[in-house]
Length: 117
Length: 112
Image 1 (cartoon, each protein chain N blue to C red):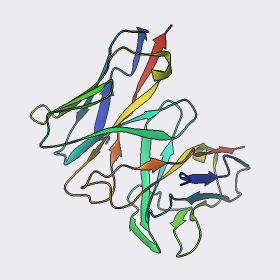
Image 2: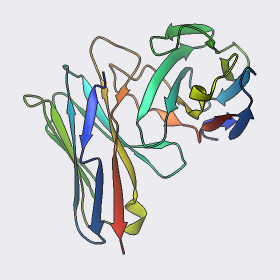
Image 3: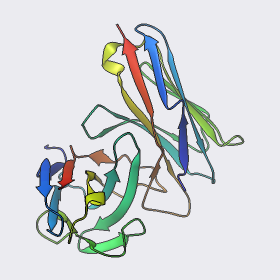
């Protein structure tokens, strides 16, 4: 059973370009979470999705950022018109059911390191 | 604001010694989890403790939870070089079925 897959592992974009980060959850997991991590800091929650639905996007910036988890295929975190401040590691995690209240373990991917030039 | 805050921010100990990291949080929780992150990698789940539990063990790990003080500790006994990593606590609350909130982490270095 493959773990959570993220690609690309490293992504370099120039200011103003678009970044697309992909996440394939573990088999059988329908809950996906996206986090952002700056160097030497903890993970900041961005968005929580179930298949075809955004459940909680309270951590997503209001502009330029969007996420989806289609019925088929990976979850996508999309950043439009990237700026230097978007440079960070973006981690995806999945779980078989909701994590917060039930305390279900989240399984993390290796992350995508975005560098904006 | 961050729900969980770990201290110390950084800890360096000799191999074989015990390492203790603490996590404090602000609001009532339903559960608390500890994760480890090796440099440049994703997080790995270590252990979960629920709000009605006071202590849990898993191998060389021992976690305590004091809900009256809103704090938890992670003890790693007989540390090894491979334990060098960052350790994060993450809290789940009754009000949110979905997300868990991570603290800023403790960077642990084990000296050979």
